[in-house]
Length: 384
Ligand code: SF4
Ligand code: SF4
Image 1 (cartoon, rainbow, N blue to C red):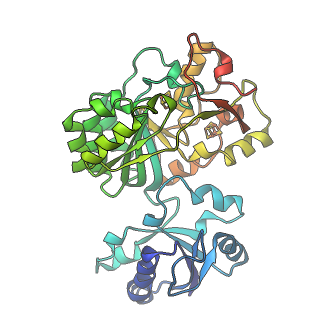
Image 2: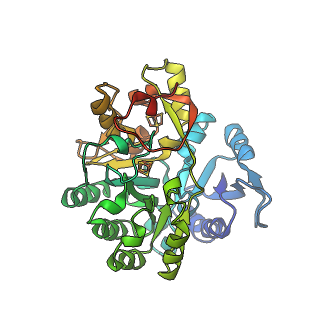
Image 3: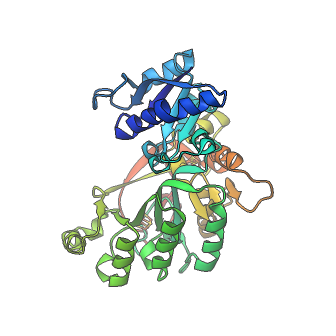
């Protein structure tokens, strides 16, 4: 019996345990495979709900995985949504990803097909699942903040994603990743793209189980047409408003408007400060690795122009280089059309630092939020 832990401590974990006990183990035994014994659930807060097996903390989970007290970690897809990734955390703890498996969606539990039952658990790197993916509808923005992480304030003119090419590329990407926890449609400012409804419909069609957010600064929300809000509702899409000082006087009106339209939304806290962590000179190897593993943005997997990367900088650094005549690396992107690419190779590469990370400091300098005053200077972007 493989000593097994399930990540998460709610109803989903209980359902996965019941599936293992009632369906997977009898099928595995019949097929001559090894059964699983679920010893515990593991979660961020061990005092949460009562469970059918003991709850342990994440720290205890790491210890048990390292010492062999637990041999297999099962992560239900529903418990892996978002930007927290085991892909970095576990190897940093000295735990091989070969011991980690995804459990498919609860909706797939009903099958009586023995092959499908045995395939319900799939290795972490081979599973066509990402917890998080984002993509741009426009590289430019109507707010132009200093130190905008995506360099939207440095984009010359209007740069929109082109729908027909995106549809072809995203459909190709689906061959490698067919399920995502959270998709964020953003930019720049995504509401500037007049084809936004088409992107929302396509994303829902390709990823029926994903949570989908449109991330906006909110400036255009009051003037979007009814067709936009109708498409959001029909495709179960939520709005995420990143709240900046210019919206202070109108945000209550925007909130009332969205409530009246019955549109689910999330409002961030008011951003009065921005962080700068960019350097002009490369760091050494140790600092680069530390910068990558401590970097929140490495979980912002970004899809752009037929390529995917750990974060957005492989795609947007060109705007910084063009504006200031610099040559920071623009590497780190994986071309989804490259011959021989597999899901395993793609997901493995997303976990590795790349040259551009040499220019991201571990330490962030906070500055008051402001817009860029033309012409922008290096001081708007570079950490002192
Ligand atoms: S609103 Fe967001 S995308 Fe636009 S410039 Fe500011 S930080 Fe960048
Ligand atoms: S380039 Fe590397 S260190 Fe910089 S934000 Fe992206 S993932 Fe993080």
